Image 1 (cartoon, rainbow, N blue to C red):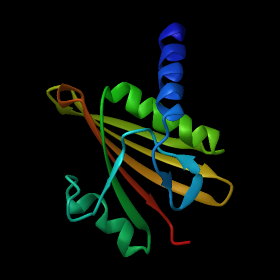
Image 2 (cartoon, one colour):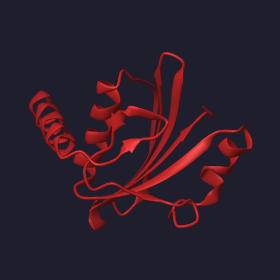
Image 3 (tube, rainbow, N blue to C red):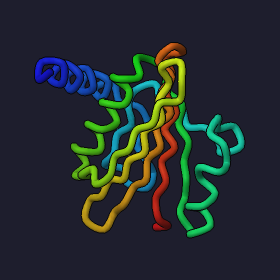
Image 4 (tube, helix red, strand yellow):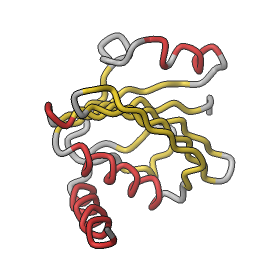
Length: 135
């Protein structure tokens, strides 16, 4: 198991080496290569996932990424850790056909992130819905 985690971290590091866009809320967070930002209108995540946070003033950003979902998730986690974030909450729920929903909260000092992962291994795709409090 330790070997698998080490390989995932290495693969995540390689994905970060080909860095894509920085995350506007915290430019220290370098998103994995190949991540495409989508408008919330084009985001494949139902509005019910981000509207409650927006009602509280939080800002949500949707990203679509292609590739191995385990590597994509590990790459984003590594990017957050390198930026000084620590995961404070993690919940996972199967969606069927191998798809998974993962809910996480991350914190770095006063900065907070609420991340919802939708992982679709059969389609080699992941959707990140990242929400943060207003600047």
